[in-house]
Image (cartoon, rainbow, N blue to C red):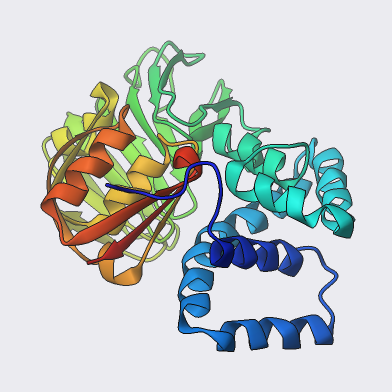
Length: 330
């Protein structure tokens, strides 16, 4: 792993992040945009650094604004706007944006990296690097992966767990003695427990299910249905269900703090590591497409990144004591 500057940024990176903060201040004028274009055109390295840093932090600023939909969002949103309007403090806010320090946007981003702020209203949730076991109202056992969140809906005629983010592993109480079948809901459909133990992961485009014991019935939002037997994995979106070559044991290895990878894109590996790292990780499209094999310790993301850098044609650069990691194809 190639270490970047620890206590100070080089002048080009500093200028790039200052421009980034100004872009999100809501105060960019036409003259500012013209000066930014001129800065980008002044030297090829300016464009390289701008793309590297803005790609990582842009999504995080957007996530911070999205917090306004939560009960604490009004307060945090006002703090964000206040911090962004303090033009005279841009350099201090710049430091906070990468070092994630200070009561400002940086502090809000730090809070989100500790606990997903958009999931603050979830019934059950976990923070970065945290796995937690819960006992559900019916006695079923639920394990949440890091940065995961669920809502519960239990009553005389229903047992429902709505997965809002991340991954879960459930040991379901059987549907007997008047209990309704346990269901896990996602934006793509539902999983009905016909047996006991299975894992579910919510991705942006699909929901992944791995059957560890007995069987489940998968039903998409459009009504397509399929029984998933023990030892099999599948993924479904709102329309269809497809097989998944990932073994259930590998898919559920996170319960042991491990990431088992068999010919998966590096982008998926990095996404799994993000849930266990409080800083920001930016990966280029070329690097994200590389295929990976191996076992990695989720609870030691630095060691995992070192192993990836040693076995793949990539460069891994670390900035600001690990708060920003940039991965690019070598």
